[in-house]
Length: 169
Image 1 (cartoon, rainbow, N blue to C red):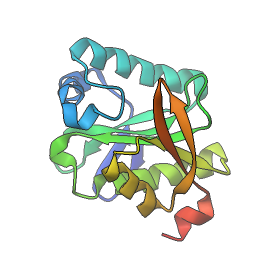
Image 2 (tube, helix red, strand yellow):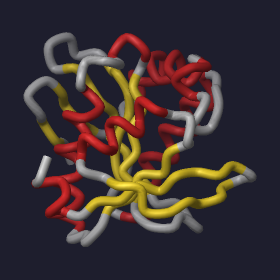
Image 3 (cartoon, one colour):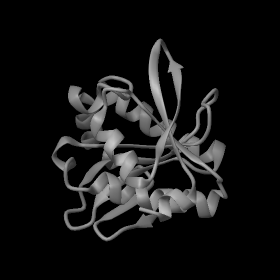
Image 4 (tube, helix red, strand yellow):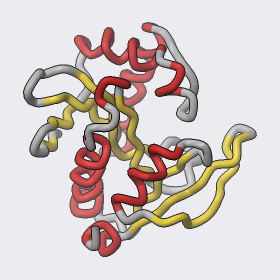
């Protein structure tokens, strides 16, 4: 399964993503609100989990590739592990890709895919209250604050949108 946007390719993780993904996971600023930093072994484990999510749920996280350079720049997609409150649209990009509108571009295309292919009536995004860049992306997509959710001793914000909300932006 792949999704193509103007500047990005959303695709399955590949073995050759491991170095770039490990580098992303080692960046404290990128990972501070989404599970903490990790090393190469963590990158492999998270890639395997992302691929397994596709097998178990029929949807999951995509690797994000910049079309012009072919480089791995992050991950985005549908996430719904056991115990999650609903199907989440989540995103994370390497530091050098942040601030270019890539997260919004990829998230918009992924959300359309989630609404159309998964037949969802609502998509959520779970965001740490201090993660203002992700809050801005959520709001640009048309997501609004729905509720709060406590996960592993951390109070998070749950943003949500419908297809109509997405289409208004």
